[in-house]
Length: 154
Length: 107
Image 1 (cartoon, rainbow over the protein chains, first blue to last red):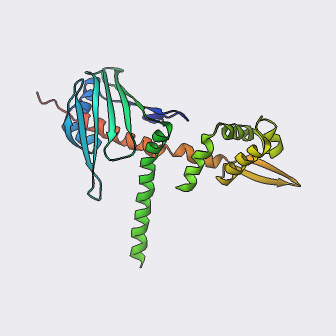
Image 2 (tube, each protein chain N blue to C red):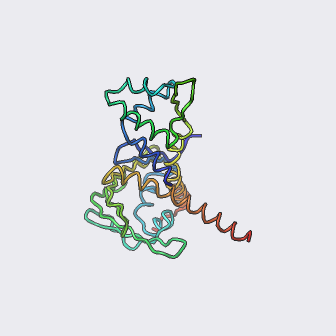
Image 3 (cartoon, each protein chain N blue to C red):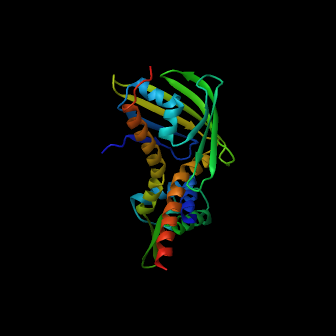
């Protein structure tokens, strides 16, 4: 089966491209990016601020299972409804620097659309480190589960 | 995690990537590998050592000769490493799609 979400991360480059096709009309896909209540649902985050305009900014806050809060923010550089959002993205209090995100929304048919997300990092090392985050988290979770099981054995 | 990081360090070097490409098609001795590079022999040996240490290469003894051959399983791990990141986005986008399919404009 073909994967719906594709990632192209070439070796040695400080960028990557995420593409995805949706069974949604273009306007609905774009709306999912600009309405705070909707962003909150699919990103699993709280939206503290979201100004959809050039020179606008946004700030999100997520709470991890341990109750720690993590904030993310960025500035919107370009905002073209139903077509394009160019923005920065930064994790607060994390050593990952700032990344540039170029989101392009494209109409395929009346009921389908496509998102092209081009992400540029400060360095190759930073990109690879960020790519590893969900992986590291998966390892940690497996490790914690193992610990739970083992501690119950005692 | 340490070993995995080593695999990435291993393939970050262009000479080591070239060695992997060479050995991927056929097993070769250290001498045969070195003859493909202008680099000094000890430098190539050092690269072979690193590639062997992180299991991208395996040594095979054939009489007095040591042949290096490629371990594709290890490289697959590198390819798999991006998978959790892809999955994370895939799950987010699936959610987005489900939410928006049910969405009714407020107006």
